[in-house]
Length: 299
Image (cartoon, rainbow, N blue to C red; front, side, top):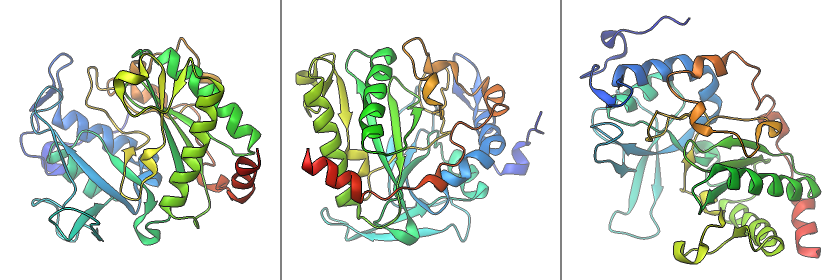
């Protein structure tokens, strides 16, 4: 078992503060989780722009989103200033992830989840992945699993390798590693074409409707996590949900209707860590989209 940090070693204030009342998980438990899992988390947060979801009173308390770097971060915390296209503030100075020190400092500020952009700061706004967010209107993961398998079939036909993970809530995220080149706007347009094609082929199960009321119990295929400063929960991110679920990378054979995403959580994740990494080779499999874009347009 990895050695657990003391609060003084990781610089936490109020380390014994309860973040999940039902399970009794504390802020220190969350910090220790991120310390233990950081070798797996690091490749997905390194040099990535972060949006902070701050929950100072834990899972059941009031939370808020923050883009601007807050006070209280360690000196020298890397940032990326990005011009705003709208709003009162001319630009935003985002935190850039990639170090354990930064991650623990964010936990100290009440950040349970890790929300990352699809592009690294040095390449912004050119992503190195596409993300599809599958959100079941029924609230049942089995519907998201079925939608994910249909999405995989389409991506396979486009000769694109894909990687699934639990969202850490009720849905499924499907990632496609891509070579850096297309802008976030171009990636978003491609993702929109993919989900439109899939929803048209399976209108009783899938939808691209923005209106929640219009979706009914269908699975919403959300391509908008691919916007330039839009974020998605990182692999190995804990989520602000009951039982502290972890957004967990999966092998495709694991994506089935009986899977319960809550089975992967802060309390038992050490068992999952000891298994073979289902996303091994993720970044080595970055793909060129040219052929897939042409095939989508032609058909």
